[in-house]
Image (cartoon, rainbow, N blue to C red):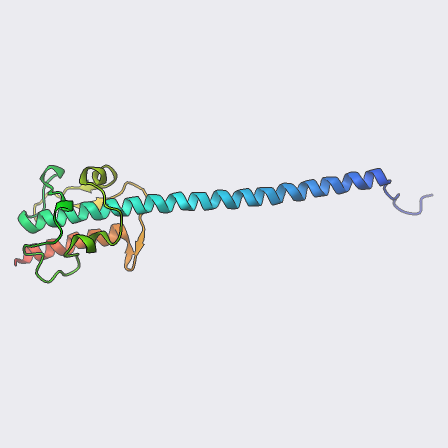
Length: 170
């Protein structure tokens, strides 16, 4: 009759310790790798959001510049490149109400893109009526955040506010 479990031999005990240490090392390495990968993913998303924000602001500023001089365009061909204009000078320049009055305010320290580069990123839904503003989107790309929400909503509010001002007259 047996008095209880048989103690492992020294070889079996050493083998069991190696297996436990191997599992522990695997999980530690997997956790470190996952953390590094996660930080890289976040960095790429943030870089894409900064690029999207710069493109949104570039296109929105060009739309404001165009609307300030001759109303909202019906297509991209009617856009005035906003990078050539530092300040609004028409009816939108008088007491800006919800939109930037200068290029520096519009870009808010974002990188400046050319209008053709920005239009490769930004999708513009052109309105059926000339008194409606275009609607900007970035096709599922991430957009950054500003004080009052996502940048995409922020720049679309600029355009809606400018359209309301243009509709009400100078």
